[in-house]
Length: 224
Ligand code: DC
Image (cartoon, rainbow, N blue to C red):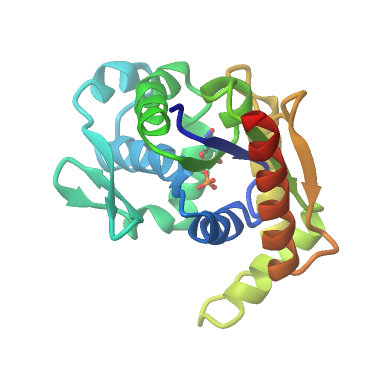
């Protein structure tokens, strides 16, 4: 039987990973955060200080993989678990920059396809419904206004000692949206057959509930 593939795309800070992880645990699917792959590629490139013109060649040596430990995704560069190292603001911006490069996307395409072919997955990213899994049984575009995304991020960071100003977070989100949406290769956009889920007015529980409802409706329909 064909595995169930759910594609969730949307801009940075829309809550895709939290919401998708919870929905995956409710439904018993594997949650795959493809942004972590782009972040690992960005870490590889920045750690070695590779100039843009050498990225394609250098990436041949990058051994990027995902491992699922007790169902939880970890990302590896060779045998090094880099799951935490890739979460800095510098790597966020670098991932957004390097993910616009076709060789980076090509490098990670096969890996994503393979995981989806072998498992029931909820896979989140920017181009999952449009490029990576165009035949996914369910596609969702999860978004929220830039201001609401910045407010949520500010709230999350305000518990930490060094919290950037709200305006700085908002500017960062707007810049990343612009880079992700306006690149030539696999830009962030809603697939024609995706369901739009705008979480601006919903809390986390409501968003998860709505996502699970959409997935159940979509998988029931595709089983008919
Ligand atoms: O989801 P995230 O913030 O961890 O993603 C980091 C960057 O990687 C993001 O700016 C865009 C890029 N990305 C992508 O181009 N395609 C994906 N499928 C996932 C992420």
